[in-house]
Image (cartoon, rainbow, N blue to C red; front, top):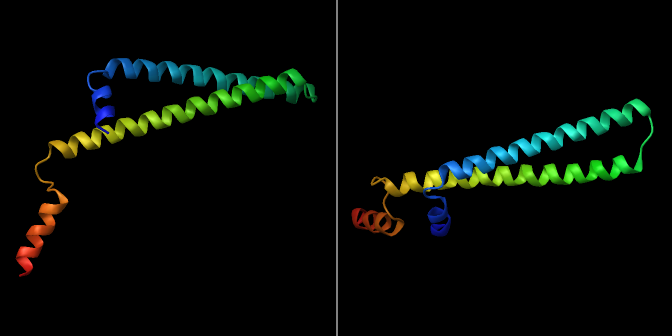
Length: 105
């Protein structure tokens, strides 16, 4: 977790640029998928080349979608860890347990 924190610090614009580029390529791939499906619906026949291209675009777009989702989750996790780390209201578990044992005696 500390390694991810160090990697993410100070790289805000770079990460945003990569995410936007990945999103643009994902949209292009999705557009190609829709275009291939429309072409096969119009001709009412399935071209083997279109099948290979469609499978390739589906794999590419699913990989890019997963990467974007995991990147978003890492970003949110980093944000919450930073927020809770800076907060002084949260006590470590062992100190909380010790104070509750003292109060119960």
